[in-house]
Image (tube, rainbow, N blue to C red; front, side, top):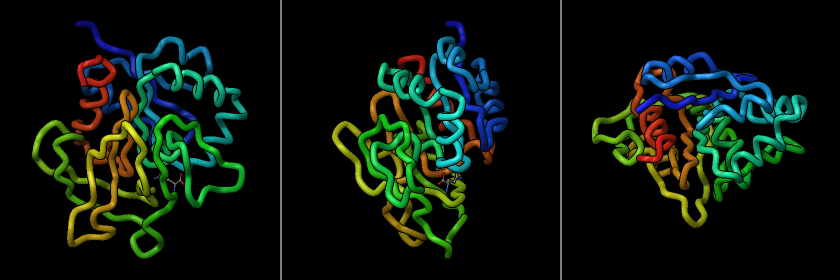
Amino acid sequence: MTGRTIGVLALQGDVAEHVRAVEALGETAVPVRRERELARIDGLILPGGESSTIEKLLRRLELFAPLRDALRGGLPAYGSCAGMILLAEEIQDAITGQTGLGGIPMTVRRNAFGRQVDSFEADLVAPALTGDPAPIRAVFIRAPWVERVGEGVEVLARLPDGGPAAGRIVAIRAGVLMATSFHPEVSGDLRVHREFARLVRGVG
Ligand SMILES: NC(=O)CC[C@H](N)C(=O)O
């Protein structure tokens, strides 16, 4: 089977790490900055960064409406951290005017962990997310969590007992859309990207 072309939204944030992860899996990665690039991708990664800044840039580049429409039309997408916020139907503690692209019936809380645990790491056992029972080292950087999931949203991972925000939802999937609060691309663990690539191939 030939490889798939996976776009990485390249407006801000840790684009290069996602491109490397996609290429390491043998798929083709293309940075996406223009509407015309949406036509040639089979799936899209929305990286971490700052969700309100990414949204402003999407609007400025006239990419906001085409991308929202592509998501509504069934483009598979994976959002990490700020990307998770962009894919949520509802955002708590949003910046004024920030709406997100939507797509996933869920409510996320921006900067949910607050100052005390601004950034932290946790080992998650989440076979539905990683495809196997080995824990994944999850890096959270001013991350959101999922407050509420709507119909058709599968919870893939929660924070473990004994750590910050135990039990909070930090990874979900809704059809061909998936999202994590954390950044798998910084740890060199390819399993989340592999699951997304499987989903893009229609076998996830
Ligand atoms: N690492 C991240 O992507 C941080 C997300 C950021 N706090 C936001 O609101 O978009």
